[in-house]
Amino acid sequence: MQQRVRLYANNCHFTDDKFDRYEPLVRQPNTHQGKIFLACLATSLGLFLFGVITERDWLAGTMGLATPIVPFVVLYLRGRGVPEDKIEAYAVQRGLLLIFECGQFSELSAEILIPFTEITSIILESKVVYEGRLGPHRWRQYRISTSRAGETPHVLINTFRPMHLVLQDLRRLSALSGANQIDMQLIAPQEEIAALRTH
Image (cartoon, rainbow, N blue to C red):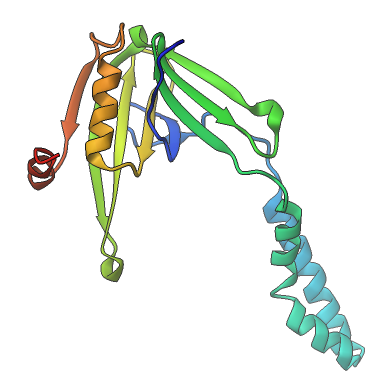
């Protein structure tokens, strides 16, 4: 059985050399949600104005209440029953395996394999954003550089998995045959690194 190291991806993107421009793993067709929202809003507002102009108070009152609600109800009903997209990332013997399951368009589901021979470095960074009264928001980020050509040849994986578990995943990844030539680095605050020594 092939060994898999799950990276517990919360989201995953292709990215450029600076890791600041993102592209989805698979491009999906436009679902026209914005157009549907505007069409519902325009129809409801039109009926409201028609009720005001023709002095049909019941229509104006009903549509006045319904105008801000109808577009959201239509979008909710339209999206009901559609499974969410799923992304999984695994390190396997041959390389990095990205699995995308498209909820709305199952034919777009795909598996993308990036061989270890094309991966030049993996930087694991502990990220934190302070959100006022909500406190710190922490996550881990794999920045995977490759030798591939193109505008977005690299991979960015974000995970909310605790740092000590992510480090275990990274150690298991580095033990896979073919991964030993990859340069791996850890970027984290000193206090977090010190806390890791207790695990």
